[in-house]
Each structure stands twice: as structure tokens, then as C-alpha cells.
Length: 347
Ligand code: SAH
Image (tube, rainbow, N blue to C red):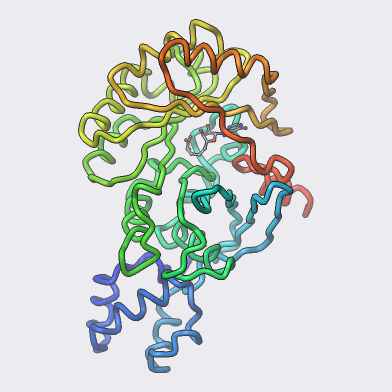
């Protein structure tokens, strides 16, 4: 990426840029609004042509382009996006009664190396900047006929490829821009950040005082079993992770979500009891995820009966848990799977 993305700039930052080139400051809000509607420079009709040319020369105005779109039988949309340097990322739009949730990526690839996840197989390629993360939301919103005043994307989950807290500054900036009243104005309550558990960054995130939902990819109830699934468990023990989550909860009083992929090795009765004691003192919800198999990761889903049995065991232990609906499995909805298939097919 050579030029900075227009969508990563706040009104204040645009103001500074305009001051530096001798343009009036009232243009900052106009440019910001166009950027948030993902307008091309030719669409910026209330901006004089010479200034439009300067915008075009200075910034990357369309950092994310929809390269392909797949629509599942259940109405889920899967997008393959191209970035300005040719890198590919993916995203999923899920339709619910209360609105449309877009799952966004925060990095090209990922360096967390979770054993079940297709995003990390080739490691981290690069971080996305705030405008590239926001660009996914804005380009899908526009693609669906929406604008900043008529939103077609109402909720955001940071659950695409990448580890959001491994790209901390860009992700925090993205959250602030996505919830800006002059922009697409998605309430922070409608934004969920999912992390594999970088405990020190969870504390830093807490201190940012955002109103988002924190989601922890837990997936195991002992350090030994978590280490087998997730490399990050070597860096932080469950005690360290849960201490950081407790810090978050105590400070924000916001309910935390724990994600839990149901596998043969992590769904015993003992796991249910340990999950209860690990989360003691934290208002939380457990989101049970049926394992999404992919050719590269070799994970197997449980039978429906075993999934229900584990859900019941959690309920009996006093936890609230729901099983995530499997949307878009016919279009390879899980992290990193679509990109891998498309790249493989094109070789
Ligand atoms: N890095 C972040 C966000 C991306 S993953 C995190 O780890 O939370 C979003 C969620 O999908 C995580 O809970 C992740 O563990 C889960 N996931 C990844 N691959 C999966 C698969 N094959 N089947 C089911 N869930 C998967």
C-alpha cells in the first residue's frame, strides 16, 4: 500500500491535511461523509474539482474492492475482497431478524497458529490499516444499496481472518471511526471483538473505555488441552487470561462472551464444571460453535447428540449457553477457507 487510505482519516486529521494545503476546514466534514459512504472522487459533487484531484493524488479512496460474492442458500453472503496491493481477504454477511452482521478481517493471514483455523496456515502477511478494516463495512454497505443514513450493515463482528488485538492501534481506531456520528455510526454496543486471548492487550483494551462486546475464544478448560489447540496458551495461562477478562468485566460491567468450539477432547462433563469455575464472577454467555471442518485443519464436528449433551451439562452447571447457528457452510463460511479455495483453484 503506497498511499494512506481515505477511510482511516478522522475529521480532525482531514482538517490538518486541508490546513496544510491551504483549503478551508469546512471541507473536512464533507470529505469524511463522502469517504464513509465509500464514494469515488467523481461522486464527491460538492467538492471543487481541483480539491478532488488532490484527494485522489494523496489518498487511496477505495482500499477494499469486492472481488467475488457468493450467496448461500440460507441468505448468508460471503465476500472475497481485494486490497490495493492485490492481497485477498474475506468476509461474511449474516442476516438476522435484528439486522445484518458483517464479519470483518483485521489482518491478512494471522500469526496465532490455532490448530483448527484456516486463517493462520500461512502465518501473518500484514496488518490491515483502520481504513481497510472500515472499508470492508463501507463497501458492503454501499454494495447493498445502503448509505451512512440508511445502513444495510448494522452490526460488526471482528471475527474474520487475523487477531484483532495483534493489530491493536488500527483496530481501536477502526472502532472509533465506525461508531463516529458523522460516519456510518454503528453503535459500539453492536460491535464485537473476538480474541484468542492476548491477556495484556485485553487490559489495554479495557483502558480504552469502549462500549463494545468482548468475545474470548476459549475452546478449552485446562492449560494442557488449550496448548494442544492454541499456541497462545503457551504465552498466557488460563489463570492469567481469566484475570484479564475479570479486569475487563469489573471495569466495564459488560457481559463477556466465551466462544467454545465443540470437539471430542474438550466437551466432557469435567470441562463443563471447569468452565463454570473459570468464569466465576464474570457475567457471561457461552457461545458453542460446531466445529467447521476444512481440508487443511483436520477437525471433526461432534454428533448433534454429543453437542446437546455438552450444552445440557453447561446449563446444569449454571451457565447460559447457546449453540451458534451454522450459517454459510455451503459457501465455506469459516475463517480463511474461501480465500484458500479460490487461491488453489487459480493456480
Ligand atoms: N483471532 C480472533 C478472531 C478470529 S476467529 C479469535 O481467535 O477470536 C473467530 C472465531 O472462529 C474464533 O472463536 C475461532 O476460534 C473460530 N474458528 C476458527 N476456525 C474455526 C473452525 N474451523 N471451526 C469453528 N470455529 C472456528
